[in-house]
Length: 48
Image: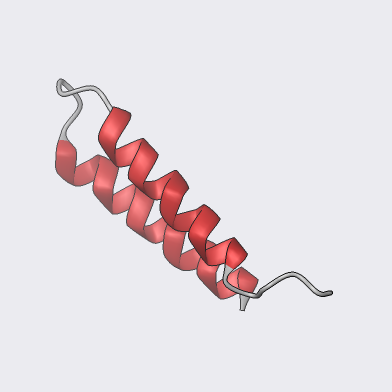
């Protein structure tokens, strides 16, 4: 029984959510979300 293909996507989404939720309030939100979004796009491209 092969593993479903949506598992990597769920892991990436969970990691991005955890980073965005647990980041300090003092850190600028835009720069953090920008880096997270770019890394998510790269990881999704690599997974595909």
